[in-house]
Image (cartoon, rainbow, N blue to C red; front, side):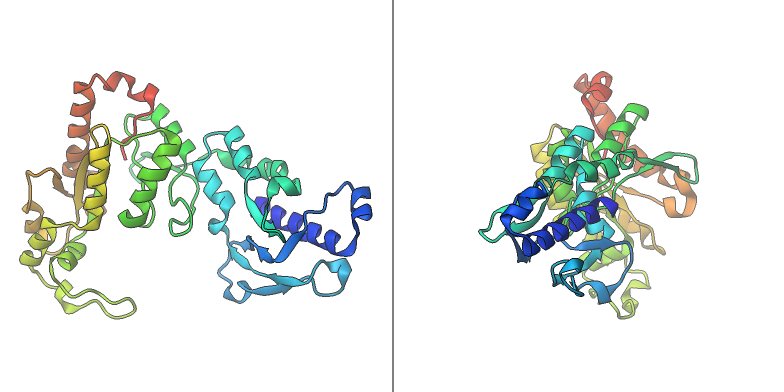
Length: 336
């Protein structure tokens, strides 16, 4: 937030100077006129609260000493471009270069005005130096977990950081990472953006399919947000589950494209558990997309052994057959 809002302070200050001073007075202050268009500002201020009343505001009231009066507003912290940069930056140098390319506003002739133009990209990066270090947590069973970055996938990258993935690859036998906003946004951005930026390629992709989701794909009434869950989802219906297993839909098709374009991307459906509909987990086995039942939510790690075998064994076998295992750490192979 401090890094982002520093850019906004620099922008509004520069606009105040350009409004109050002529070119000669600007030159005395060692400032170049950027001719910023107050009606074409790209960024808002950010804060880490849900404050809808501040989404659209007027700033600069109280005379010319208080800035240039104009329309502005607040967004939430994770929507900042600085957060997206934290997720995709490879190192401090890369972060500094990306920070300087942030477009804050446009001039009256349509030219972009960046943080570099405002002279604050270096200071913004300085705010972020310690943030480059991932946060180390652990699961209930003692597995290490990196929590790093949180950019929304509907407006940004929607991924855990590249830096956290790389550190994980140096420390663990397997690295599991997650994409935000499901397969239609999250996986697409993971495969087409994050993998290309990082140079990492996954050995496995997992599609999460709960009993309710499979029923929905299999013909059950579509739930409506804000309304009670339809009664059909509360009772057993193995037929709907089996039909849903036959066609996982768009997420599987997206992974199919990744499969065809990668060096041996393996896929696995993580099958959810609910009531007695678990019989549907057997539907469609033996095809190109293996399926496994997971009850990790109930039994912890012991409930995910079938799922773990379905993911790890084919990927390990493929790496071994390609003489890839010994170089996995050096080349940065990722299990996703």
